[in-house]
Length: 277
Image (cartoon, rainbow, N blue to C red):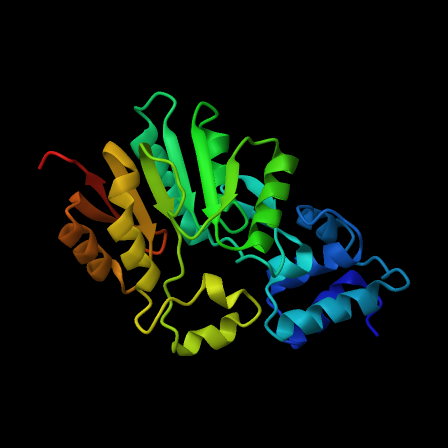
């Protein structure tokens, strides 16, 4: 059994656990704040307390088996917010911050904008928008009651007044939104990559044979819920930008375009809705 923190981290690496993940999991096993990685450096030769190795070993075993680190920690950072997450919701990805940043840029010139987040999951997008724009009315929907429990708890803990509702995409939503944003399921139901995501909710990942089923539905229905000049912004797969732009153009959206994530991949596409063409 390892006797020091440094030895414990080496043991985790030997199990195939990424060093950063191992550091975060060790902090959790030691009861330290997971943001205090510098604490590990200052205490690298400390002896492991009784029980800490067993707890750390269990966490590393689960991580090596593919369980997301965020689930093991119970939280994930997103756009400056610390969100509580568990297997009822997808783990928020940094790529999705591209969608939030684009929405905030479009809303910058609007007074008290009305914003809608479809498929909110943990509430990540809606809460990030509300945090950045306290004057906005932010609504968020999800078809999963379990996901909404997570989202509402995050909103309450962060004291952000997002309004949540259970709905099948836009069914029952209000109208006149300045922005509708969504990170819907977009992986093809037969995609081999789903196996690596088996710990996350399948319903939030897969969307028909080509991965576009939910995107098609949102594009088709959104105009009825947008204000004149309102924007629809959608996250999609790394190879779906052209297909999503084609859907938006065919539905009658204007200024159809995409935005790249930090890796230079076209991660989001959107367009503006004008009733007068």
